Image (tube, rainbow, N blue to C red; front, top):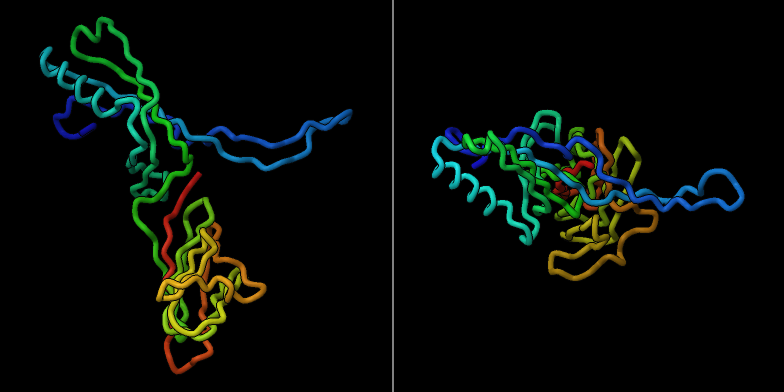
Length: 247
């Protein structure tokens, strides 16, 4: 493992996690006018360069370390999670990108002859976002509400919401005024990202979303949710689950 005690592989630097990936712009050139017509900006993939130092006290140990490195970063593999934890990135929590090796550097010089080599390895993530390793959860009750929670990701969260024992429930963010309602009695699941609602039996009840509803989406910052259910004798609940992400 890179950086483990007595490991022959040491991580000397990481480039590409703090910087923003390239932006693909759809701006249009204005004809016979200065400037451009503004279009949408979309992130391209994220390149991340690892600088790894390879050591070996003997030629055999050095050769083994190089073999381990080349096997771990073999070109042609599918994208795999590259996990990391650095203060200041992803709220200081363990996070990951899904990437695959694209380039490897290195040179045979005097340091190489003495069993030391510095190797830049470029990983490429077709999805540029950095994801938290752990899922976040927030629970709201129709009787007690919920405390303020902080959405830390820079990418708006679109959670999966499990609503239980509710009658025509309305989920509201008191700090933004955003509401989402479903004309249904019982338990169901709201997939905000897919914009689909399914009953506990698996049936598609998306058509029962009430007019004027906004699919649950939470920008970075504070949020306080309330859940209103027409059956006040039963404590309805909503459990939100999402994975924080950063650009």
